[in-house]
View 1 (cartoon, rainbow, N blue to C red):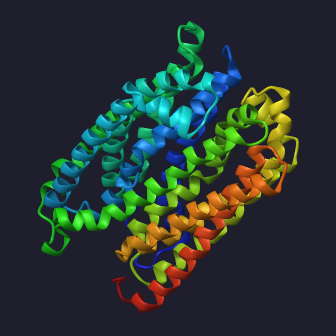
View 2: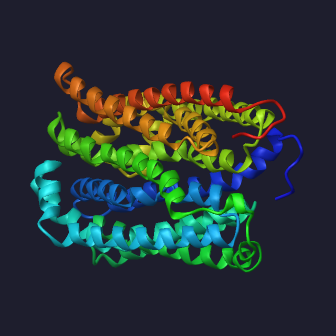
View 3: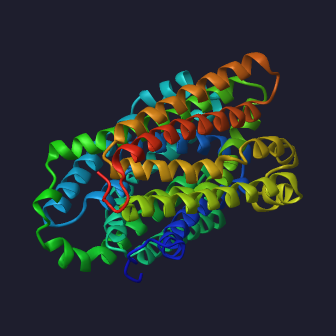
Length: 443
């Protein structure tokens, strides 16, 4: 990356963002690849549905560590701050791995999946087996995101993309090899493939970050940039709660899908629909760290906002075109390998979530600004509003409309994204007016 210009330009933002967008795009491709493999194996509907349950629980388990990427980008400035982040990451990894194994190896899993989520009984054991093999998931993701954040902090965004290429290659090769071998059920193979991918990505991230650990992060940072454990907890706990609250919605949606019309079809289609949404939202997810790294003053704020609005419009327009053209059947039928009944069921839910990519860009821009201003509590409140609207929308939809569960879930999800975006917009405007003066740094 070239050095940052005195005045932040759209071209520089684009060059900074593209490697991170590529990283998220590669992670988004991972889910359709796995869904396509499962769809071509025995008991496709059951195994797709089981993997949807497994992945939702795995995301919930790892949720406290997802925003280590943003925390590392914002806070890793020298030897002391990196050391605190590394210790914090290790403690989180140990705790979440123990939690993962406890859920997988005790009756708690059957209670959560069979009773709380109320998934069909035939999904409990296939999803448990897949969940068990994913026990290294949280730790591998935690360290990878810590080291990727360091790379972003020091402008090495091109190297972040390398870690994701390795991850996708390891995941894909493992999945294809397992499909040819045929010794594992589809959901379990997907879990093994994910672990192979995230572990490979973490190893490469550690190799790439080594020069920074030997140079920049061996130097003492300014006294004002040193962080105590108390400060780190105050900064990070609201972010961890943000993801925990957000991921709670996925198992709850799974519960609702299992009780709505066409439960097995909806549960089988849901992970495929979410993987498509993730594919188009991936560029927006990448934008959060761009804002955290580059936002400094009023001019930078305006430049970052213009970029977010432009790509919000472009990404949602692309998904809308896929939903209303023959590309919809091509994607679900040929790429995802779904049977004709699920392909037909997918059109309306895809149309309903077509604005989701735009909200990803807008939310990431607003969250990045609030992180730089150390107002992470507002991010947590926004996600709580998102969850409340999601659950209320699904609950009301099931009582008012005789529609398939997948359609109701897509509509409720879109309403929740819109509510979060609007709330964050008001908070960002308040923060900007109170904290940004032309030519001065943000508070």
